[in-house]
Image 1 (cartoon, rainbow, N blue to C red):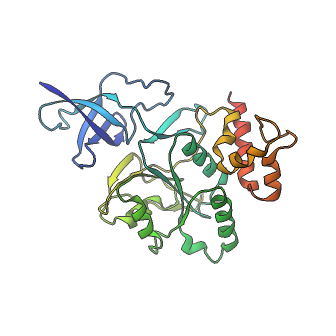
Image 2 (cartoon, helix red, strand yellow; image 1 turned 120 degrees about the vertical axis):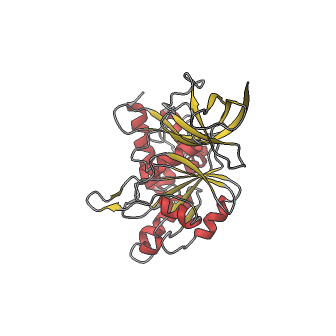
Length: 315
């Protein structure tokens, strides 16, 4: 006799999944039978880590030989999705039903690419995910890169985002980060080499995560996390670790909507003479005036123009 229940997807490895009935942490395997199509979704993965799914199983705990069968996915309260940078432009859901997303970056080695960061922030705004920027390895950059550090804070705190300085190596800021994750489901994401897995390990040394090295030949990290996976923190809460991301394209956002997801530009646009305003060529544009005055950073505005152009290109 079969029975139906709900559980959360905590690991995705190709066609196999691990589930747990959060907040309990008792893992059991599951598979998909048939195809699950989500209404309105263009993503290549119909089931993502963080999804709450309805599953069916024989009486008793599912096993590798007799896994549970995922029947459907419950409606998501939010998710993070991206398009790959390759020619396929396929969309992939990184994680679903999360309380916050920690975007881990470094000033150098690998150098933070602001347009890349801004694409993630826009996506978080669109899909109702609270983002926090984590600036790792600041013990290495605080003196040598003091001006860049100050500029980074000015750009992103000026846009309304929280920026946390941390050092996985020295343990700086780790306690505050751990406390921010308590009793929440938190996504950790970033490009390879920023020290994301090392940072998670510093938060909870008992976790078994792979930690990689920087490739000096390419000044980027080696991929160490190969699957999307959730872990329980001993201090409370759950974290989702992700493979290093190389490309981050926007999904299902019309060009004329992009400016709505730059909080500082949205606020400034209230003074624009024309509505709608693309903030590019229109006279009396309050956003362009704010860029000239410095209340909207040139770097963020430049990212916006790049997204606008890309959005028109792929329409």
